[in-house]
Amino acid sequence: MPLRTLGYLTVVASLLTAAGCGASPEPRSGTRPSASASSLPPVAPPSAPGGPESVSPVRPNIVFVLVDDLSMSLVPYMPNVRKLQREGTTFTNYTVTDSLCCPSRASILKGQFPHNTGIVKNHGSDGGFRLFHSRGQEKSTFATDLQAAGYRTAFLGKYLNQYFPHLTMGTGKPYVPPGWDQWFAGGNDYRNFNYSLNENGTVVKYGSEPKDYLTDVLSAKANNFVTTTAATGQPFMIEVSTYTPHHPFTPAPRDAALFPGLKAPRNPAYDRVPQNSAWIAPTAKLTREQIGRIDGDHRKRAQSVQAIDRMIGSLRATLAKAGVADKTVIVFSSDNGYHMGEYAIPAGKQTAFDTDVNVPLVVAGPGIGAGRRVDLLVENIDLRPTFNEWAGLPAPQEADGQSFGPLLSGTVPAEWRTAALIEHHDPATDPKDPDFQKDSASIPPSYDALRTATFTYVEYVDGAVEYFDRKADPYMVNNIAGTLSEERLAELRTAVRGLATCVGADACWKASRTVS
Image (cartoon, rainbow, N blue to C red; front, side):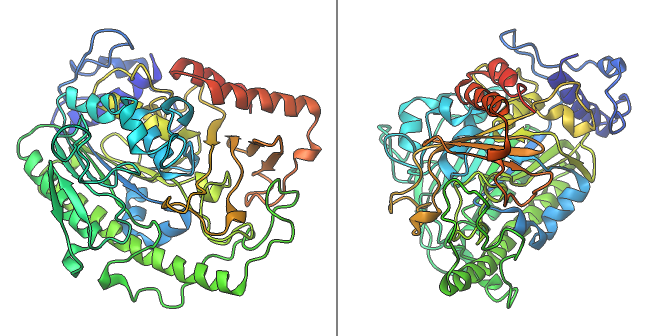
């Protein structure tokens, strides 16, 4: 039985149980589902790609909370996220395709690597919303998939860099992309006050009062959408995409005095240049001014995620009140991570270090194991195929990723990817880019990288390479590429080229299993 069908049936079985229907018991952790899983009550599994569409009558609602620049170090300050982890499954090796906002978000929408979306930057000729739109990418996303399958869809918050609420894109009115029944999107509203939202084709301005704080506004609209849609009985999918904790890390006014004296974590990588670094100067050290700014910003970041955390708790309460909590899957993640003084470079992202590319992915809902940690490799290109599977749809023909549905029930597949691709090209060096980093020395050259469960291999545009054995060196402070044999280096070069040029699920799946 195909992996995507097994994962789909597990969720359906739990939904049927909640509805009072009989179902086979959930497989125990570490075991493969038995053949009896296919003898569930009459619920049609997804048809094979390219075959006739088959839509199940029992499909979970999906609540997707995507935050901006959230590093693993902030999760301890989010009690509702930690509760979600206790009641759901955490993917410890979840990796983003690029530690940069727009390329990562395009990968999520399309289920494709940046080399296939064509979005490798936040703006300009090779990135941003305008390029995504001009390439016709919005005509096929997880939103269009789910809307066509009968889901009521809603988007709230940050869309793609260079999108602004007033843009018409030739439609004669503020533009709403296809696939979304409800649309509340902003522009470069990182300060969270004095912004505008495109609210279903009408631009609405907000001010500077505490009630205008953007995360809280999005939370109220999201809760309203859940309440009104749940009452209709129609399945729904909602993405709430916050601007925090992106720079300038603006907290809600009620949180601005929290965590007095909090400083950035002083882990073994803090203010330490990796040995044999391919691009960081060996003499680099943080200045006193930079250390002070990093500590202050870390505190503000911890403050700014409090409103996100409250929103998650509020949404879960609303789902329960509406009677659909046991029919809803909640997904929490970030578009990329963020470093705060690690490797003797100031605050930022874009690197291949785990601080920037290994971010939270937590999933909770019917049929999903509670308190489980999965260390198999999952990427943001897998979200669209997973959403499709939950909706009873075949995997998207164009997607490079695979559904991680089977991993949520405790199933250990006989085969799974052994390497994840990270590709970062044309770094954000334009001061107009919201992800521009003032200290240019902290911006890495373009690179392609492989991240496995045990090591990270990075190949830079100038030919330099790095290899970090994360099992022996979890903080990635010792580049041992120079100790590898020519045969091993050749194997890694071939593997990264294969993934960096693959197209489609079959080719990318094969390429992701050529090295370990």
